[in-house]
Image (cartoon, rainbow, N blue to C red):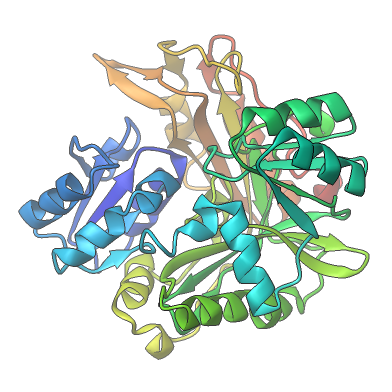
Length: 416
């Protein structure tokens, strides 16, 4: 199979790594990719938001499957353009991607499907926002209705900060705060059948102890030893399948990756949000544990054949990812700093630990930082303690001036 992956982050590097290990994949391309992806796939320049350019590239390469990684191209309709060219694509249509593109749309779908979620108000004026904030009280949860690259949500006890975030957005969803631990659960779907993956937990705050601003995610781990063994089946029955059924009922079937961000509250599982693609950094740990070759799974979703797929196979190993971010992230990051230690990790820590590139680029012989989240150091082990130890040993080999990373990823659950 000739596969083209669209995107340039650590999620896409994780996808490309898994696809490169799949014997069914005979050619692997990525556009635009990054310095790490270049080691496993042939890179091509393309505007990832331009559906015609992406579909033209797919045709030119003879791609038999296109995998769209990030949310912005999906919301821009890139998957529709590729489908229009007659090429199977893993990723929802522009209309279906509104499950992530609009928080208000997602709330409407959940209400129609009977999916348990937080009570909420959609607000377009400061007066409406003030009324909603007053109705729910602290902690205040304010979400930009549109795409915000993982940074559009403010959770705060500060009423002024909540109101200011609401005022900065055209339209916001203000909702009740959900207590309890958060879980990310991905599901692959062809619009009818739904195949859940293994759950993961990510760490959204920038600093140790869940302090600091919200980020796109600073690390993740899987499995979740503290979670109810029946959690995945329950979420499939009460959240994932009803949502996919409702989208099909509306005439906008959702195929691709449906990501449910969940809170395990005292009153049961509640959906915090839906995403229309693999999450970053959870993808890094989930794919580290997947034993079924990836290309066939994604192709089955793209062609409507998911029901014929045998059950997925998983490693009993645990996986931990630690994100190394640039100076000043999540504010305007500093870029252009050289990265050292990559060869040492490959020589000393493989195959148990490896580095997935996010914001990097090749600059002559050097690899330099080119974004906020720069690297995802991922490791597997017999349990979370061993995986964590291996991940941080590899992190210690990496040099990036002014960089930051959390030191407590999976610490509590690993007993560290």
